[in-house]
Image 1 (cartoon, rainbow, N blue to C red):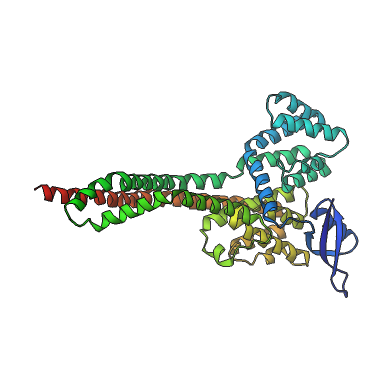
Image 2 (spheres, helix red, strand yellow):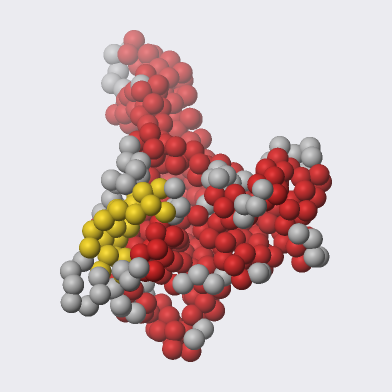
Length: 409
């Protein structure tokens, strides 16, 4: 049980109220406030971690979830198949535990879940105790499926989500991997020449009192500096990498509007595609739109995801105060006029969940096209840059040889 500080609007004619409430989750706290006639505006956990240690812990938990995406897809699919066959959740979990006896993942998890269910604990509640496996969105989908008596459908949705999870991000990473490897190879060649071959060649010129070509000097200085300070440079890059993962998870970290505006469109489309598809899954599972938005917000990933999460929270607050969903989508950094029109049409037709899914799939297709375009451009560009880079290094090595030949001649 957690303690939340809330700001809620009271009935008409009264001011807003600030107080604290105990609830298992922020979603449940909002339900409790609405049940007593209050309209929640903001809910915040009092003991929410703001320290870098808490951010590091969240990063580790998130890493475990990402690492288990494939395993969870298999778990959800097998679990849903057994339930459709008429097996009870507890028996289905025991079957999974037995069939994956040699696996320390699904087998042990299934056994623990089955033991809790045998004690009368619901699947969604026991899943919340295993946060390195399940996030809030997954637990919410399971809870909605249990309430509606369609747990197998909810698990099938989660299996589909795990199957597509990080698909676009992995594809973009594979596209960017080629130029990164090329750059590393080029830098390695430059360091080798600068510290082994070029010093020997230039020593001959020094002995003959001949000036060393400027390009050769620059290449040597760059290579020698990189080698001499390789450990500090490596440590600095490692610190930047870790900071880029941990710091954004701190609740005090904010992403500037300029950073989002200058970010490549492909990152924004990947983020919105995943968010809209998750919203569709949650609303199809029976959750209210506002609950779905608040559950979706913290699942946005990366630096861009932090800004999108803030935007989703603003949208949820706007709806909580009586605004419409389509009117809340006014931020053109994230939502296009087409997004707004499609959502408005879906709400008017009473098909919001289906519309959100179509919007998410449309953004996925848009992201795929942008990644294809990047792939088409970045590979020849990296080859051209590598040609200039290697050409400069080769020229730096050839110029001393030419001068040596002039001496010999």
